Length: 60
Image (cartoon, rainbow, N blue to C red; front, side):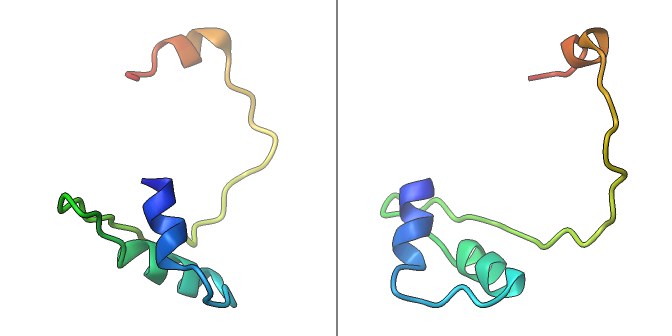
C-alpha cells in the first residue's frame, strides 16, 4: 500500500498536512483497493504510559 501512496504523490510538493491526507485519500491500486484517509486534529496528552498488561489486552 505504501508504494502506491508514494507513487501517487511523486513529484508533488507536500506543503501541508491537508495536501498529504488528500493525496493519500486519492490513492488506488491496480486491483481496485481504495485508500481512505482523514486528518485527525485532536490534541493528545503526551507522556502517557501503557502498561504491559494494557498492551496485551489489545485486539491485534
